Amino acid sequence: LATFKVPENKAATLGAKRRRPEVDESDVDTPTSTPSALLTPQPSTKKQKIGEGTFGKVYKMEENGQVFAVKEISALDPKAKREQVMLESVKHKHIIKYIRTFTEDDRLNIVMEFADRGSLTQMVQKAVRDPEMLPLFDEQNIWRFLNQMSSALDYLHCHKPKRILHRDLKV
Image 1 (cartoon, rainbow, N blue to C red):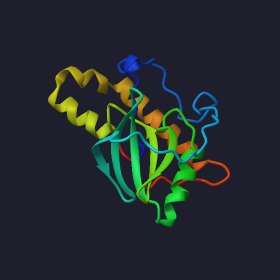
Image 2: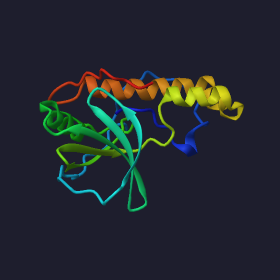
Image 3: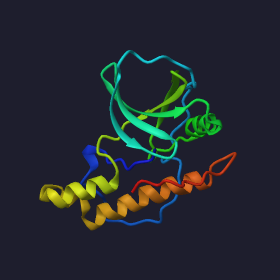
């Protein structure tokens, strides 16, 4: 699940200088010691379905006052563990963060950061209906969006030890 993130405090501010999108040390999050522990969720923490993809469904989950996205996949699917390992290994400031994994009723649940503004497509659709959001899409911010997406894709394509090709980009 890769959606676009806009920090609320930086949504409409940008320097005028344009630069070539590239990965530098400030783009890559330093690895944390988040284990892929198999945890059990608190009862009834999954709330609403917010999406569905090739692998499964995505739900919004609240836990200890924080909101997360939970990707639910069949634990019997041989690709499920590979998906978990890949998400655990990706650490970049413009890619949704992996939090942890738990199993429930033969379903692998991958807990990730929740992007409260949704995808870039959803933001554009909202801006069409709400003129107050239009400044978010001035030329400087559009270049910033492109820079962030290019940086994230470059990181994935150069990922070590194995390159990652993103086949389900949410714009």
